[in-house]
Image 1 (cartoon, rainbow, N blue to C red):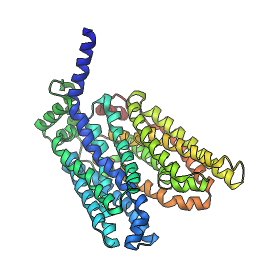
Image 2 (cartoon, rainbow, N blue to C red; image 1 turned 60 degrees about the horizontal axis):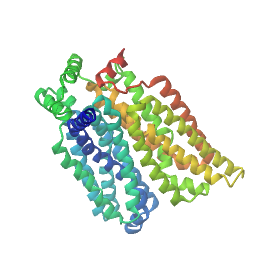
Image 3 (tube, helix red, strand yellow; image 1 turned 135 degrees about the horizontal axis):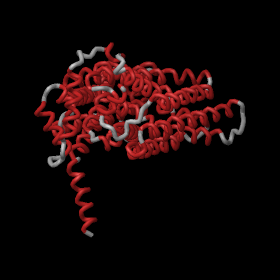
Image 4 (cartoon, rainbow, N blue to C red; image 1 turned 180 degrees about the vertical axis):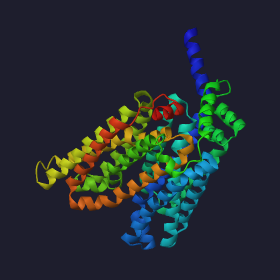
Length: 456
């Protein structure tokens, strides 16, 4: 009995010590939730906005795609902003810009105001998509970093699904107004959490660095080893010249660039945004009930992403990424064969179910690894002095890939429905090879240990 009581006491003490880490993560991923609502907004509101503001399809296409344009600009500047203003400063700025974007959409009476609001929202989530996983990665203890960083992707998925569901019940202006709420929660929550200790140390704020680390680890925790490890690593970085874009490709940094850029490129070029944006069309083309398919799609995406967050610190990054890429290959092949059977009028009764199972296998596989994994590893592999530059480059690659897939998907489907998914399957095969050959395991290691191993 005494032993059980002692264990319970240790568990409660552990939770109390890490309360600020959990709370800080919850505050930060309010930005990720806002990200998801921004991406999901244009789908359920399309026809109501077009009717009320008399927009043509081409005008609404501008409204939908300008989000990505803003996000690419946000990605380019986000790293420098996070280095200059701090991680909290970058998140605070993005919350204000995102809130302003939503208000512009809410008040819009003409297309230009609508475009401006959408561009501002895009710019803000370009910053958020970089700074949130980096902040969470920097404040988390080694053993929890994977699980806590995965809440970034989980919150994006929940925000996306919420926008879809709420869009069926409220008008487009009210939905835009609701988008301000997570921005406000992020802005206010940032007043109650500490800055990233690593950013404070990098900027010479020694007292603030120790105070933030103490706040995150608990008042009775022994922070001496972590403090000295971070400080020793920063002492080495101080001997290096100021980082420029060219420094990303130095022998000490190029492996981090290859790993991060490669994973982000594969995350997009396996075709995920084609599946997400056009899942209704895929179900309809294959003869499956699109409403039922979309509902099950959203539920599965949230559930499996949550499962991946629980597994990533137990199973490790590499096994989940390998499992994810292999599942994406299988899902792509199932969808491709369903369209191939349809094109050649073979086993037509199986076509809808084959497409449905293929899409669900695909989205489940993406959610368990390739959704959160690249963002987590990006936050882990870059040394502090080039994190802003490297993270900006990687986030730009991600948004550029998102734009390419979104833009080309309909053209590819017109060319060949089954050919499109055989092409994505080939990219999935390349991703498996890349992960197996290039991507290291980072589970349970400090950020400083990861950087040292990449340079060895």
